[in-house]
Length: 260
Image (cartoon, rainbow, N blue to C red; front, side):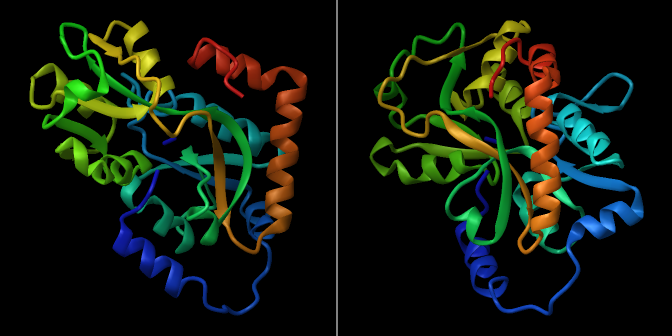
């Protein structure tokens, strides 16, 4: 749900990038001319994006982006970048789209457009399997890890009554490592990648928290504003994938369930 840029930087984006800009051709034209769709993601959010043993970027988001590009008649070019600057890179024209598990929030919709959603997920808290912490109240005054720039970072910092020491990291692998080494007591992330990591043998477990907000949120594909043709082409490709069973195959391969 892969997430939200910092408040100050967000303000700059909302104030500066909402100004009137010269009319330009729809990005679909440049995508077709180049013969490729450049897709941004972090490569640090398994099973959605990760670097395998062959040093290749793979995952659910990679396969979704590759298939969308294929159905548009072009090739996908995968670009990895840090999450906290990923929206700025899109707006600056460094790539055509973000297919990186981004929650389609109202704030983000002020600066980019979204295709999809292409899946849904919600906020969850994970602790070590050996931890005695069982409810959210047990985390008072504890060290909590989040991914830098995600919506979870903003949410965690807003929980002033919890007294959390919020620590930021690049992605899920770092969060798991920090938890394993007892440098944090818990971490907050979307539920799906955490659950998948647990099934893959990572010594983590999800807290059973009934009142945690941010559940079942839409995860979208971000594109620059003012590109309706590109948006329609990508949406059409996504819809056809969902209709013919391709999406389900990709989802089962990486997540073990249909997560649309």
